[in-house]
Length: 63
Image (cartoon, rainbow, N blue to C red; front, side):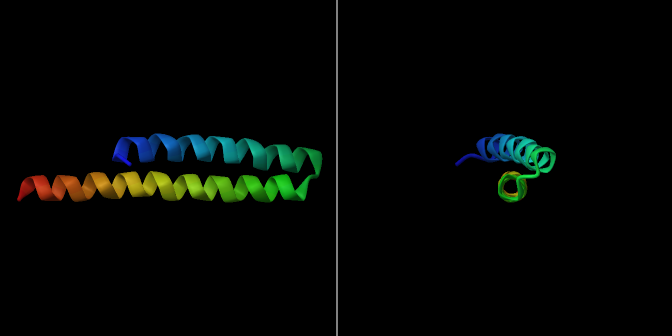
């Protein structure tokens, strides 16, 4: 997966996760809220992976 795809997928998961989390809070649905928190975290990891790939590529390009 490319770094850009990781970043975009990560941001999309963060947004979807936040929507689920807030919907779970509003409807008093603990399961949906927990799923949202997990999806948001997954998105943060994906975005960070994309950032790390960019950093590594940039470092290699300088060599």
